[in-house]
Length: 260
Image (cartoon, rainbow, N blue to C red):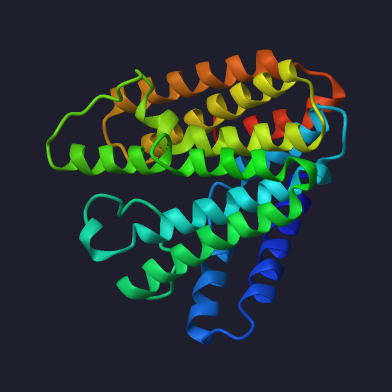
């Protein structure tokens, strides 16, 4: 099921881009498609589908939130290919076929704007709230602040998030939170389930961030510590999700995504 949903997610995102960019320059269209085709962390976007199923609906109910999360992550990530970020985010996958600062900025802006436009038109009665949550996830309270802090750390400046959240929660956890919370909202979940779904997203997103970080570390002690932290976070998420049939997609995302 997970592989099938991944393909559906990517195919639908391509269709959304094609419909929106029909009369735009071919290079711009191709760049946006390239960002989606080579995007990573698809599992985190599919938390929206897992969440909607967990809340009693079908996995397809949460697909609008999943598509939005995918395009937002791709839009932010391709911005990091700009040469000014060289040496800071080199470990991220290259989304464009060739390095091009102008194209990276324009394609990223286009994807972010399109993601919000798509969500506003496909979120049904929850469109306004979903758009608000999406903007929070990538804005000053989410990914952009996390990226700013990463740049500071690369420059030797140690910074602390004022509200005590971890860098992994800002950079990866908030967008995963949006996906999981969005899927639950689209499924008509209760306030309690919405809170639980949001927490599952934060925990899973943070774990994924730590696993990625471990992949690029050469320090055995750091790799061990990061792995332990990631497993602990996933265990917490698993405790909330449970093991009933409606949680099978959640569990697949957790345990088929290199967390263990």
